Image (cartoon, rainbow, N blue to C red; front, side, top):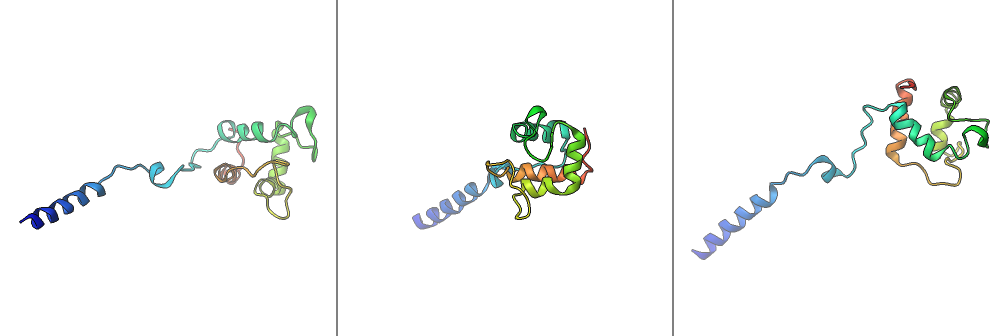
Length: 121
């Protein structure tokens, strides 16, 4: 009789432990949402935080590239150099210069923005 109750108790507990309400972030870590990428909210802050020290106004150190000037951004995107450089591809110049590679999610957002036709939204 004790074995029967013990067996039922184990089965009951296994059902309880299998019922969880984990959300996607808990199960898979941070979720990278690239569905609503905008220049103003997603791309510009990346440039400001990671690129402006070398590519802004009077501090244009490399390639005459001012990333505050949208026409310059279009030029570097069209050349393919932006993605090569931020992805640290072998034929690119790893950016940010002397820094670590941008997070994968940030790169995915930039790729999505480029795929959308680099809207200035």
